[in-house]
Structure formats: C-alpha cells, structure tokens
Image (cartoon, rainbow, N blue to C red):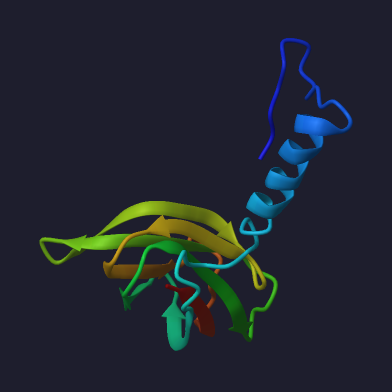
Length: 143
C-alpha cells in the first residue's frame, strides 16, 4: 500500500503522530501477505489431464470463500518448454466464460484471479504448440 503526496512521495514526520501512522501501516501491511483468503483457509487441489493437438480441457473448482484463486501450470510432458493457453472462468450455459486468460503460459507460471464463493472452470488450451499430446498437471490454490 502506498500513499502519495503532491510530489509523489509520502511525507512522514518522525515521532508523534507520524510514528503512530508508520506503526499502523506496518501492522496493516502485515495482512498484505500472499495469503489466498481473508479467513486464512486455503485449499490446494491438483488436476492431471491430457492436452491434444488443437484441444481444450476444462476442470471445475468449487470455491468456498473470497480471496485469490491461483492456477499454476505445474507440469507439462513431454513438451516441457512450449506455451499453452490457461484460463479461469465461470460456467455459463454449459460453456466456460473466461474471466482471465494467458495465451503464453509455461510450466511454473501462475494465473491469479480474485474470486467469491462459487464454481469456477479452468481451461488449458493448445494454442498451436502441442504435437500429438501432452500430459499436464495444474496446482490450484483457492479459498
């Protein structure tokens, strides 16, 4: 969290009210960690699937709380260095309506999305790089 003055920098006085403000900021920002939920409850799920040439896969995740849903492309074999499409959405009329999408996801990349309770779909898509088929693993962390 940043505070800016008219010159672009925070003006904090030493001692008195300024020190109190700094202490409040430090305490407030201690809650700004990479915790995925406001309540602190985090669920990790792993999905394994097969992506074929020109193919699209769809996984469903049920989220119980509000916070950040993170989808990591944890593994892709045998073509470990290619990019694929990775998206998060919600199902509408039987289709995954994407809320966020990366068309250049590589192994180790994480796609985040702020979510509220509900069902979410995760899409892995060949964007023209899969030859034959690849097995993938997704690690999904959510509230």
